[in-house]
Length: 404
Image (cartoon, rainbow, N blue to C red; front, side):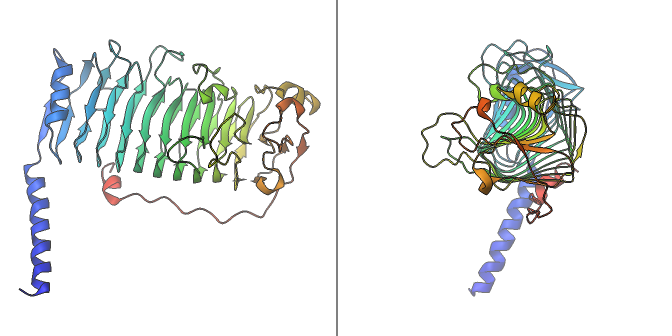
């Protein structure tokens, strides 16, 4: 047989396999009611690649977490206001739903009152969260679960049109991942509204972050498998009135986020913050800082580098700053902090590029061991020398098709 003929047969066989898989895909319908816990978990276990697990309208009263480890499965409800996975009676402390398989689509349902995280996906590539609501209905409390939407260690992540409310760490969190889009979503009354942590290549746009402690955070932390977070675009978001007092459990890194923070960049590289609406954030609209906590990781770079800020619309900010020493600094500046400030970590070599026509401040704390009380504030000069724009994040077409 000629090589060309072998190639033709291989293509034909692959096409047949794909067609057969699609032909035998099924929809598994699960309704709320008695024994919903067992029936829903059995559906997630018995699903085959290509199947849809369809959740009926109503309230599923669940007492334990759920898990999915089958690839290419869609879990679909009747809408985030109609299909509700209610974990108020959850006995364990784990997440509501854990996904560990690739090419999964989660859409059109709600998760309420989990003891741990709302929905977590780990090592799940090409994961889609669409029109999902995760909420702790008792309002902001330290005892709420840490994360609402929580994809980690993944390649290709889409979070689209979700709402998260009440997370005691981050509402929408993407960690140690690559090629990420978070869009068209609402983060409300969380400690961190949206957080991109230790990740590469992310677009965060067209979101509303309001009444959180901090609106949008871009962090890089030590002692993790993936460090050196970089190439993050924060654009066309509305980040306003982030005024909820910090309710994170003590010891969590976000417990240090000052109430009234709009956008916060810490120890990350090539972060571009542009074309956002920012305002009514009592500490500041945009904060750029180094990592100022003890660590023993020789590979970790605690300095924020390559940060650029331009084209944003600023409303009132800085009238009630909440980090150590901030009140003294604000008093020295006439009663408030400017809408943009940088702690000075790394000195001139790491200075952010600021092109917004509003005052911007350096605290002059080049030494990461220096305390805020020793700040020597000076105003930053605006710059028109913007860096080359980062490329738009493009996800596989299958992911975009899943939300059309």
